[in-house]
Every structure is written in structure tokens, then in C-alpha cells.
Amino acid sequence: MIYWITVNYYSTELIQRLINSIVEARDAAFLPRINNQIIIINNSPDDQSIYQLQSSHILILDSPQNIGFGRACNIGLNWVYQQNHEALVWLINPDVILPKNSFTNATRFFEENPDISLLGTVVYTPNGELEFAGGEFIQKTGKIAELKSISQELKTKSYVLTDWVSGCSLLINLKKFKDCPQFDEDYF
Image (cartoon, rainbow, N blue to C red; front, side, top):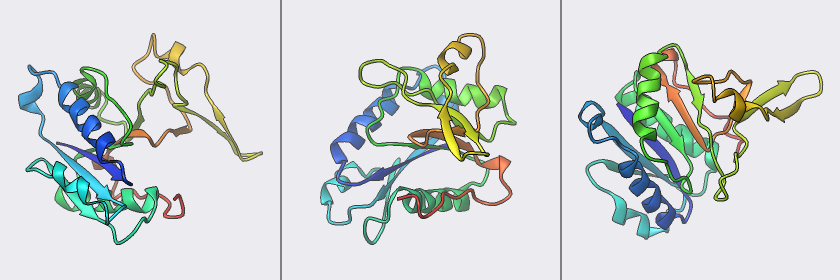
């Protein structure tokens, strides 16, 4: 089961586009094996337009106000963990558009690599350039450095080990955690 979590802050149109890309990113032959649900954390409670997206596969969880990205993600993660603590969770920003077969490719990746706990996906800008995707943390200086060789390494590998990954498209394999993973709530 894959649960998609996205955070709404006056972004109904973007989330509709994201949902359309999720549907289009699914390989029809692989589809019957994959159950999924989209969870929208509504960080703009006065934005009533988001409710037009609600359906049997789309759940909207309201926050009392704009509580920021980290706390909103935690609402979604906690909800999913209570439903199925062995699920895959795909945290995804509302402005992301998934390429074709990415849904299927991610599911297959975790079938082939069940020991992976977190997977940041490669993200491209609208111009087709690689967005920061991961890198290293230099403990001595506290510097977070982007790993520029990721795109080259991915030509020969299915994944690259990094110290950090981007939270804009992040998959979490919940069965690898004894407790529900959480974001730092100060990360607004």
C-alpha cells in the first residue's frame, strides 16, 4: 500500500495537477497490485476549494491553522502509521508532477530493495535541470553540501547513498521503523 501525503497551503490547483500526474504515472498492467490513498493535510482551513478533491481515495485532514510543513507531515505520518505501520509513504510537494511509470518504478524499487528505509527521488526543475536531490552533511563545519554527481551515478546504479535527501519527494518505508518517523516540528 502506498499513501501519498501532501500539504495544502492555498494550492488546490497544484494538488489537482499532482493527483492527475499520480494517476497518469501508474502503469495499467502493474496497477491491480497497488493500493493507494492520497492524504492532503490542509494547512489553510479557510480554503474551502480543497474539498472538491475529496473522494474515496483522497482524504483531507485539517490542521487548525498553518502549522508548517514538518508538523503537517507528522499529522499525515501519524495517521498512516495508525492505519498500516508497514506501508510505503510518499511525501510529495503539491507542485510536483510525476513522470510516467514513476509510481510503478517506486513500488518495484522497494520490492527489489526491501532494506531501504528512506528514498529521495530525483527531482527536475521545469527547465529539465536536476534539482538538489541529496548530498553530504559535513559534521565538522555543519555544512550541507549537494552531491553533484548523483545524476551521473544513477546512470549505473539504482540508488546512491547520501547523508540527506530532499523532502519535496521522499518515500518512507514504514516497516523499517519501530516507531512512526517524525519531522522536526520547528521545520516550518
